[in-house]
Length: 254
Image: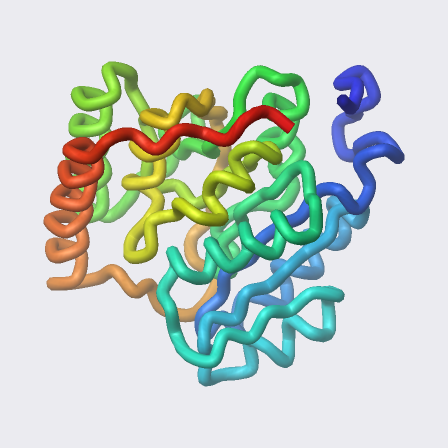
């Protein structure tokens, strides 16, 4: 196990080099992907990156190949859940000990990746979630999105009997046990809120930490207008269905 004492503000020990993987799901993110990958390489050159090009019709795949050794080109669009699960399966097969999920739209600041990783390395959590609503980030989501986030927060708090302030956040870090589990058990459609329930019921320890998030750096969100209401209803139903099933048990410690 890596000693946490070796963790500095922006680097990690030699033992962890190339054992941590940054998973970047991307669909038509040609405007934001280039600066994002440059920033990741500048902040954390030790970590490997895999860009999962989710059937993009623009230059996403071409841009990714300029910056990273690993690019997975999906033949058609699977959606965010399928793209992230592909990243987990790549991490599992590559024996990575840590995985960090970073959206391809540039909203997640790479300078805070180490803040996500530290509680996982420290053994405090199996999963860390970057929350926009802890600390003093000043983040104010659009009204419709804030309503959805509030609904998910209340629902998850009631079902799990603990507060999760930002269950829609896709800025997360995972240990090896969680990687192995999610490679086979990651929700496919709109996965972030549902995966919180799945992980908690499987016995994984979840910790939120405060992060700053930026506005989308390019492209267009898949959740807008009528789609945001549909998204909220569908996710609530998915969470309730998940609660009706027998919990999936987490894998043994490795």
